[in-house]
Image (tube, rainbow, N blue to C red):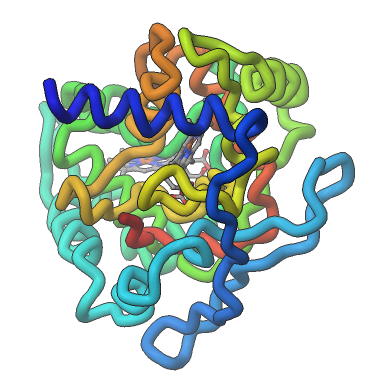
Length: 287
Ligand code: HEC
Ligand code: HEC
């Protein structure tokens, strides 16, 4: 209860920003993300045409020095345990066909390189965009005769993290010319700018108009998705993208849609596009 009240107070504070105008503002860090001293990530990118901001920035730049340092060092990054777990799953047979991911895809380092950077992709069978989680379920059902994972199953998060990690450092790039992607982008954009909930806030209220400001201890970023699934220190766990979306919507005191529904898939297409050019950072570390 106490927690709930505190959160409401924090969120109400945001609702008041425009009026009060007294919230602390801080520039994002003037820092480079170089993993293990060798892999330089793109944390500031030139926006794609039609983007509302002057510069696309990774959420890493808005975190504290201590949190940033965790992501810079593979041995310290707690998300790397999930990458290791994902590798085990990749190599383990499951389902009636007796196959593992590796049976068909071989070494993920080769077959999955770049794949995570280009999702969501258009799925011609489903006639809608799908993300990595849904692509994994499709392979489990159609190619392994295994059960699809339920949303946020620990193995779903680990395997998604593992696949995305194979694109570490590669630029996020969604192909909007596939199928009907453009209209999903439009739908996602509409959701992004629609104010909802008792607090009457949209994604843009926080991540576009007020990025750089603080909601209590949280330095508001642009809300980019290039680090997902992300290790969150607060939860001491990996957090999937649709879980994060749902959390942000819940914070506006609105009804929040189920994972993988059309609303959230469209939002994923649009928000992924907003982060075009940033490096895939999975597993990113956030507070
Ligand atoms: C029986 C063979 C088979 C198995 C087993 C299999 N897949 Fe697939 N997978 C495919 C085929 C075929 C495709 C479609 C290839 C294409 O579209 O280029 C595919 C596509 C994919 C893609 C999309 C690749 C891209 O470039 O867009 C991903 C990701 C993927 N599989 C992950 C997995 C994972 C994870 C597992 C294990 C849980 C798995 N697959 C098991 C055959 C398999
Ligand atoms: C009340 C303000 C608020 C609203 C409204 C809001 N968010 Fe957030 N969001 C946050 C805060 C606070 C964080 C954690 C700090 C940060 O990264 O900005 C966050 C984080 C995120 C992240 C993770 C960024 C990263 O680098 O890990 C994503 C993605 C995100 N939000 C997307 C959205 C989307 C999409 C919407 C609209 C459905 C939305 N948010 C609405 C406050 C908000």
